[in-house]
Amino acid sequence: MAKNQTQIPSLEDLLTFYESAWIDDWYENKKQKEEYFAKGKKILKDFYEKSAWRVPKFLEAGFHLKIGEYKLRGQIDRIDPLPDDTIELIDYKTGSPKKLEDLKLEDKEQLLIYQLAATESLNEKPSLLSFYYLDNNTKVSFLGTPTELNKIKEKVALSIDAIRLSDFPAKPSPFNCAHCDFKGICEWAEG
Image 1 (cartoon, rainbow, N blue to C red):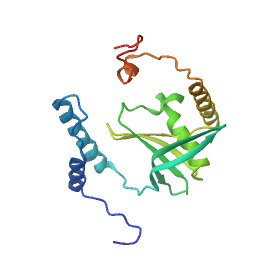
Image 2: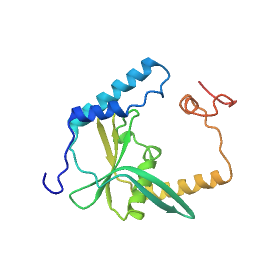
Image 3: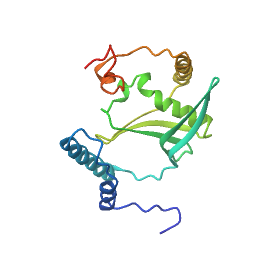
Image 4: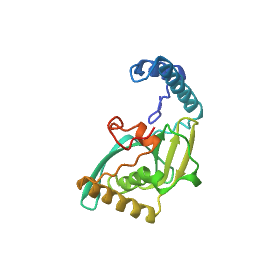
């Protein structure tokens, strides 16, 4: 193999690894487990067949980011180098895919924080922020504007201030309540 050339595993090897790494005990019932297993296998096959197979610059890249007086720590799923010496930040999603025109600031928050972190903590220059939706093998990309980046800094600082004050107003909704650890004892629980 030539220097700097990456060996791509065969689809068969990838699926064998998937089967050996599968964790069997997180599912409500046997049917759900089988559906998730089959769905995961399909996602891998589709990704394998569609992938451009770029070699990432970083996977699970850790960062520390200072916003105001606060320090954040996190991980970026994937960072790919681009031909113009910039980078693409990629966050994998399993939820319902969204179109670029449907993304609101709230949807972009995570990648905007990653853009700040890549610039300020990793000394990289992002030119593309991408959500990669695994369920249908699509990607939605954008780049945060200075206004969006300032808004996210302000929101993060205000959120941390609220945490420090222990000010957590309930935000009941069928989705929030379905995933909340306190749904069994909460007077506002929905669903």
